[in-house]
Each structure stands twice: as structure tokens, then as C-alpha cells.
Image (cartoon, rainbow, N blue to C red):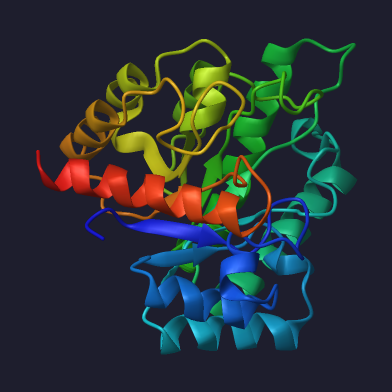
Length: 280
């Protein structure tokens, strides 16, 4: 496929990879082999750093063996919803550093270069001040990522999908990245979340432009299969190409329908998007 799609090894559930039924196994190395055989350019894994070290190494070796680039991992798959990154006390800042170093070690084992960052919201404190604190905290540890050739990518998450997180809109993520002012701090451009908050995901690409560190896709409404909803994907991919983005396009959703039929329908939609893009 022309588009550099990446499949996942699990979102919130590490045992539910994107194409478990079609691959015939939920084993991550079997999933990687299947993705490589079906034209995918990469693989990503939100829960990578929570996996045993030996499994991380095996996943990295499988990705290299099948010619797949490794995409993003989640910064903290265990404590992701806690408000760690809006804290400024010494203990929290020490914990922030530990979390980043741990994730960077996991990313190095698979050759990953992007880490998605979310944090919890403290409901009785001003959100703007919490975003400022997150920016300053990320700037403080940015050199750790930069030294490894990795980007920490702030991800806006639609509150209707996951409530209780700090960064909900694209503008909030951009404000944090701009305040951090470091090349290792970028935006995780999740098309589905951006659309779910009412923003135009095509226009948003022009606004984010060079600040985009990674791209994840799902359709709207409801994080549907890409191609099954209302997003103009032809325009979106054209806008993305115009920014010079050459990274993976991570399919961060689950099939709309269960089983082999649902997975086959998702695959067909991705192939159709790829064919339409080739024709442009």
C-alpha cells in the first residue's frame, strides 16, 4: 500500500490486536507477520512498556524481520489517567523523569521513535494552569527523548470517548507544544479524537503543520473504521502530504463489527482509501 498504515498490537487491551482473527492468533509476533504480509508499513503498541522485557525484544525482532517500522507507544500504560504531568512538586517531577526513562528503554528495544503523552485532569484546578505545568514538565525532560532520537507527542483525547483527561482539544495540545518549545515535543494528531470534539481534522492539519509528530486515524462519529464515517480522507491525506509528514499512519481503532467479517471489512476500507489516494 502507498499509505504507510500501521496496525496495533492492542489499545487498552494488550491481548486484542487489530487483526487477531485474520492473523489466527493474538500473539504479537503473529500479528506482525500478518501485517507485513498484507502491505502494512508499520506496527505500534500502546502497552509496550508494560510487557516483559523479553517480549519487547521479541516484538522488535519480529518487526525488523518482516520489514515493519515501529510506531508509537504510550508513555505510561499503567498510570496514564493520573494527573502526573500537571504536578510541579519534586516527587512528581522525579516520577515524570522515571516514567520517561522507562518508556525510552522500551522504545529502544523495538526501534520506536514516538511516544504518545496524555495525563489526567484535576477537576478543581484551572485547566490552563495544568496545561502550562504539563508544558514546563515536558520541556524539563525533553532532552532525555532528544538524546535517543525520540519525540514525546501530546495527544488530545475527546472527553466523550475518555473523560477525565487534561488535553481535550487540538488547540490545547498545540499550546502545550508551543510553550514547551523543544523539537522533541510534538503533537499526536489523532484524527478521530479531533473530529469528535467538533474540530475540522482537515483544517487542523494546516494549523498543526510542522508540529505533528505522529498521526493516528479513526473515522467519526464514534471512532468508526476509516472510510466508514464522515471524514474526507482524500482531502486529509492530501493536507498531510503537503506538510511533508512521512511517518506512519497508525490505525488506532477496533473493527466496527466483531470477528473475521469485521476485520475483513476494515482491511477492505483501508485498501480502498489507499487506492483512492493513489489516484490523486
